[in-house]
Length: 456
Ligand SMILES: Cc1ncc(COP(=O)(O)O)c(C=O)c1O
Image 1 (tube, rainbow, N blue to C red):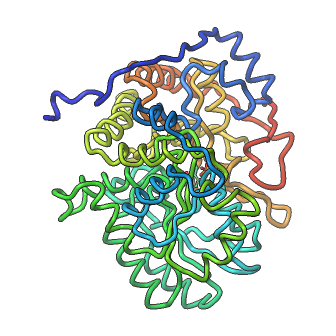
Image 2: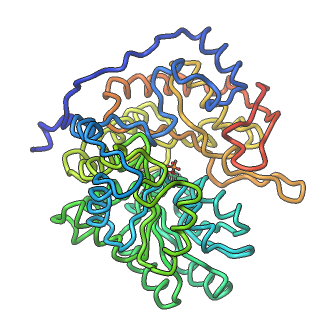
């Protein structure tokens, strides 16, 4: 379809009615949730941009596939379909189903990460970091320095800094059990990684005999960015690009809740036969048998169909286009964001939005709460609450302080995006009136999920 005529490449067959609330109601709801957006009822949210994970609208084909579930403890035909389709994309010998991405991370890292090991990545996402650390490892972010400059426009701001990676290998040598590349780079603004960078990392990993894994959550979106932005890939399909990407690595962790277009599901895929021996035992112990991995077999069918839909070019054009649409609207209103816009989300730069609130007072979290009160829109903090920590009694702050607005796939229209933009721009106009937050409770690990705050 010609660009000027391409709107949504689907039409709506079923709707979910939304509860409409007023500001007073929302102020009470957020207070009751201790100013933590994870702790309010989803029903009380009008436009839910907390995550793009597990929130996609499934297609009629996927729902039909669910009805064709062949529920069996072992050897379900849905598993065979899942295995065939994922092997056709990833190309790896072993395809293990899991219930979601973090289960794949747990299986992989608990098998190969030992106490004191260093795991370099462009950027680790929260569960990835937590799974490395819970196995005694050190999760190291080696993304290019420009990734921390939110205004710098670069086509592939998710790239790994190759010099830093070489230095890390020189220093740590055999202490590195694997190198990880997150595509797209969720913790750093949903920015893509170029094929050139993937090739270079793969070469370094192979020269040093270090396994190289891809965190493949948004690999289809990354493939589309490569097609749009990298020379030589204009005429390749997203599927061809994805295959080329995966061929450079030894395996991947995958949360199908993103580019699998499903509400639940994941996979761990790799070539190493010795690793299979270790991982398979754990899979059976903690997730389930190797032909269902913590899922109902019908869910495997929905993944097998969903991953192919997510690789369709018209779908990807619309998907990335909707994120761009929201970003363009916000830009018109002067809202500071991570540029260029990411694939699955817009990341508001809270340090620049609220320069009057120091990081010790959680500016991105405060902005998220205000956006919810303003229009019932829920985003998520990716800043001090998520990645900050206390070391030797001293607070350590992350370089980026962001409010992520992650757009569920095929779920909202651009009129919803207009509301999000209008609400945020209205807050921007009175930004100097906003106040920060004080954290009154924090868990030892992944504190942002359950933290409690008080308004200052
Ligand atoms: C980059 C990245 N890796 C891993 C995960 C974990 O996936 P899951 O939520 O399915 O456990 C996420 C989830 O958002 C993610 O964005």
